Image (tube, rainbow, N blue to C red; front, side):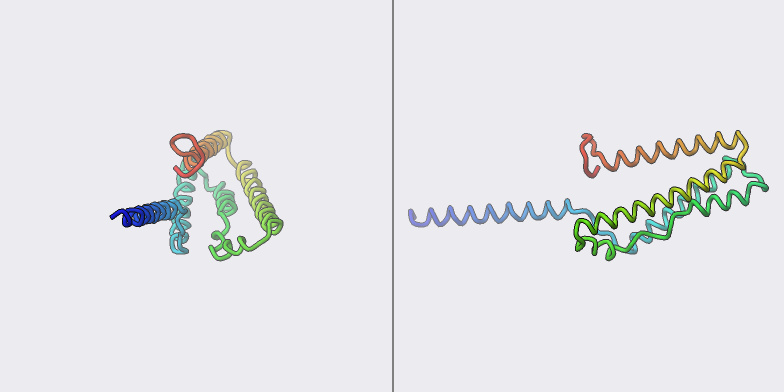
Length: 169
């Protein structure tokens, strides 16, 4: 019996370590970010397009766009429509194989594209804003401020957990 005790202890230790490793691996898998399929991304893009259309309809109604302002409204909404889709996961996965300078160059190129989009949006807003009456401009400004505040709140909720620490909510 004395000879079996060390072997039994070693066996129990091995089982405990294996169970601990299994629990740790399972926890790590649960903490991994979810992988979304292209179908999920397409659904998300459709949902965003529907929300954008609903928002445009509400803003059109709130601003009480006149027939004379309608062409400017159409130009404005077309210019504000985001470009078609995000790059597929495969395109983003290849970035992992790039060197740090190459990744930074791609990041800079994306930032420059974003800046061009913002400039296009600014020009569209200025052109549209110029055809609005002072009352419509006030409504437009209030709407923009409200949207900005809501977006900041959503981003903060997404970035910070309940305890205020960075991470998933």
